[in-house]
Image (tube, rainbow over all chains, first blue to last red):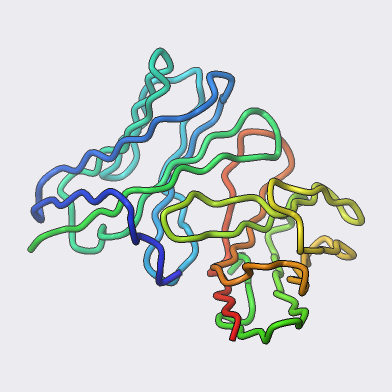
Length: 111
Length: 113
C-alpha cells in the first residue's frame, strides 16, 4: 500500500537512461520467475516472466536475465520513463502453488 | 474486463473485532491466495486454495481464517487473535498448473484503531 517502498533499496535513474534492477533468489530448485511492478497503494502488476530453461527473455522495453549458477535475476528497462517509477520485485516458484517474493527495489526516475 | 476485485480499499478495525476482506475473481482461475505486505518485507502467504472447498495454511496463518465456497470468491477473516493486523492485504489468483503468473487485486489496507 502506501507504505510499500519504505526502507527498500532505491535506484535513481535519469529519464531516458536504462535501468537494471537485481534480485537474488533463494532456491536452486525454483523453475519459474516473475517480475512485478507495484505503484503506491496498488496491487502488483505482472511485467515479464522466465522459465529456468531460458537465460534471457525480452518484452516491450524490458528484458529479464537469469543466471542459475549464482541464483540471480535481473530486470532491464530500456529508455526509462517517469511512469516506470514504482517498486519492483521478483518472485520465484518451485513447481508448486507457492511463490516466494523478494522485498523489492524502489525505482525513481529523475526528470 | 477480467480481473480480481478486492473490497474495501481501506478498512478500520477496533481491538477485539473480527473483520472480513472480500476477494472476487472472474478469471476462471482455480487457485486463489491471500498475502500480507508489510513495509520492507516481501509478500507473505497467509492462506491459499487450489480448488473449491479446500484451502491450506500458508506461512503466517495464525489469527486468520478463510473459506472457499465458490470458485470466484475467497474471503479472508482477520480475527481478534491476530495481534498485529495492521498491514496491506493482497489477494491473488492463478490458473491451474505450475509456472503461471499470479494476478493480483488492488489490495485492502487494514488499520487497527
